[in-house]
Image 1 (tube, rainbow, N blue to C red):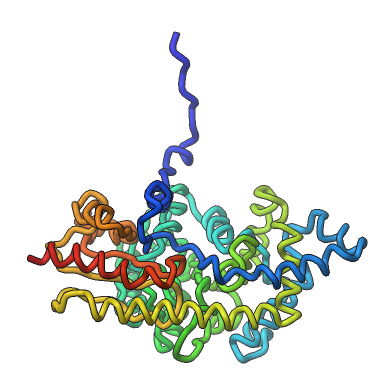
Image 2: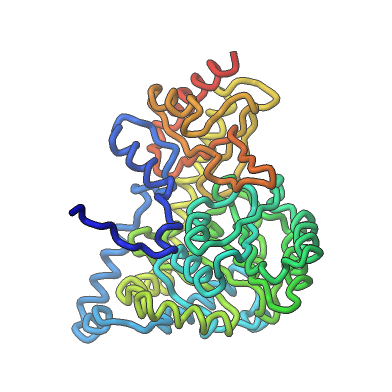
Length: 426
């Protein structure tokens, strides 16, 4: 008799392979490719010497070594949570008390991705609605699909999420008796993945106001993904969405040490309303009953010693040079055409390239394979959208990441990309 298959859960069956897994596999199988695909960090920026010095400090004292090599707590290392409060106060230029937060509102996680996942876990039942930007972070979309969420999107422009369109959507859902199914709004407030765009200062308090307006029979959680906040290369730092949630009741802000310091530490944190934090801790206790205690103490020492700030300056300088080179190369090499446009990201790791509707950038659209043959790879923009009411997904965009690409390959990569685009425009 044939061996029967396992009876996988409905949740497992809703979970598909992440698109990035395919893109990374293609890049690894073709080592000569110039990759603008994976959003990994530049390996030359990783703080090897700083981390070695911190690790030696942690392990050279036997008592401290026994502590760092032991399990920690589910909520996370208390001195690091207190240091994070001070760090946030510096970023916001205001006392944490004015935002009704303290160390008890901070949970340390295994990167910000775990925080995003657990927030979905504690909020969503199948059929619940999460509203996102269009385009949005496609990895989180996969997690939301796992929970059976109904993802709805509002458009973006160069000032980020068009918050008045969000207001209209929530009003429409309310008028159709569906507001009770809306559980969360997800917004990348700084240098968004995939566009590199930032939510404007004027729209930030308005977004929080809209969420409060429609939090009627239950509160809607505004999930602020601030993973790229500190990777800012020009312009002023803007106050977070959290800073406009003065009573700490509506916004969960997710941060990470991975992008600005060391990705291998896989340490992030989330700033939460107290009642949400309780539920997140209960779930996290079942996940791992605490992220790496060792890595948390490395992050603490980096913050307290000044190594984090010094390293961050160097990281920003390196990425700024890459961003400037990519933008200059695109200006020089891409064809002059009214429908060939790209974003000028003031931070983060991404540039969003839009092409005429006649050019299909999807995996099966022909151009993707032509680029592979030419020696360059990108993320098809289709991954970053959700079908609209007509089941339409735009297929004329691409996400370009310059982070992991060696700087001497950026211009050749853009030239290869431009060559394929020019053939498609003929």
